[in-house]
Amino acid sequence: MKAIEYPKLLASAIAVLKRQGVISYPTEGVWGLGCDPMSEVAVRKVLRLKNRSISKGLILIGSSHQQFARLLEDLDDRSKRRFIEKRSKPTTWLVPSNDTIPPWITGDHDSVAVRITKHPVAKGLCEVFGRPIVSTSCNPQGAPPATSQSQVQEYFGDKLDYFVMGEVERMGSVSDIIDLKTNKVIRLG
Figure 1 (tube, rainbow, N blue to C red):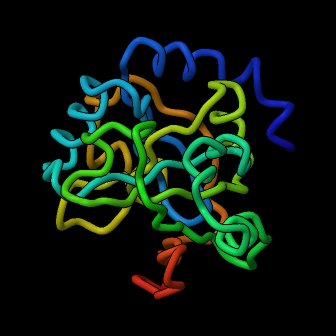
Figure 2: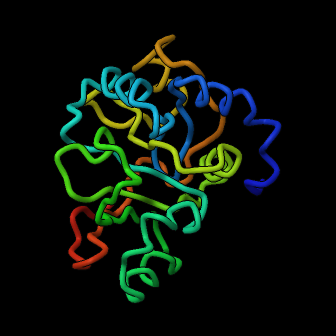
């Protein structure tokens, strides 16, 4: 199913995002926790659920490079091309932050982690929401990321505002993280 077929199926999840809620949804390799990155209230809910420090920062996913256009506008052409090019596996890029990204997303960093998602559910969420969403692994700090719906339930039970049905694509694999300006690999997924 292509992302464009999802709008009606995702309406409830989008309503929760707009109400500053937290959702769980499948991504390329693990289940994700997500919220509206512009809502400090929602981001703090995610951080509390995970018992994660705000200083670490969070990843944003978008449906296309256009959703990150304002963030990319100050980059050189080579960096923009690298960000847009198709890759064989999910890649999260560290991009210099600007005034479009709130401090509760960047944490103690001068950069923000962003990824163009290919997963049909996650991509559909971003398309219908109209902008990127927070995407952090669905797990309490120190526990392995959830790779199944039952594991999401085990970790968070009724603490989530909405659960988007679906399946992960590459069971258990996380994205590579690469600094876009230096091309330095921070993490191999």
